[in-house]
Amino acid sequence: MKVSINKEDCVGCGLCADDCPDVFEMPEDIVTVKVEEVPENLKNAVKEAAENCPVDAIIVSE
Image (cartoon, rainbow, N blue to C red; front, side):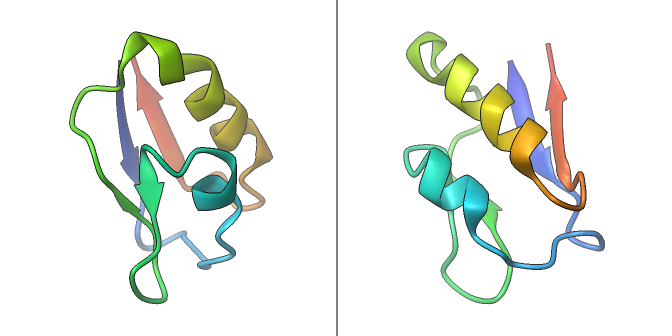
């Protein structure tokens, strides 16, 4: 599974970094993805973060 952020849509609320800090971080006003491939044990947390994103800025691909 791969994950990315649509930076044009991201509002920097930080929910994804709170939900899954091993994959997402917020060094500035916009979230960045820390890993290219999501580890198996974090896939559910990434999916949950994507579902919780208020502006649907998280893109998950299998």
